[in-house]
Amino acid sequence: MPEFNEKAMRAFNDKLIEEFRANGGKVLSGPFVNAPLLLLTTTGAKSGKPFTTPLVYTKDGNRIVIIASKGGFPTNPAWFHNLKAHPTTTLEIGKEKFQAKATITKDPERQRLFDAQAKVMPNFNEYQKNTTRQIPVIVLDRIS
Image: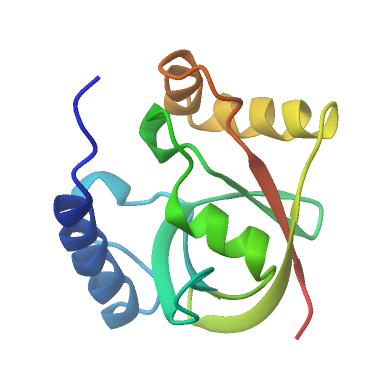
């Protein structure tokens, strides 16, 4: 597996965030056209600074489900560590912005939610095959 390039990923994400916000929550170019995309703003576990990350998601009833895949790399993404330290987060979905509380799921719920998202977005099965870690699944419940 190639080395994770943090700088390239940040540049890609910044462009995606800009396009998302400029188009009322829609992405009009690149690999995420028509994908269910949200912006997750977490509070840095160490820095206390806000960080925004674009992520694909699915729903489970009223809950929003995100997966900390990091493309199958051996470590969890920084946003996951931030959510563990500060589970209250801000979400942007479409034109709506609201707060939510994150809960890290455990099996068997984790596996059920992972499988549901992988059924819609098969790349997640590949990500799991590429790593020895169990990829975390997080549910987000609206609080405001």
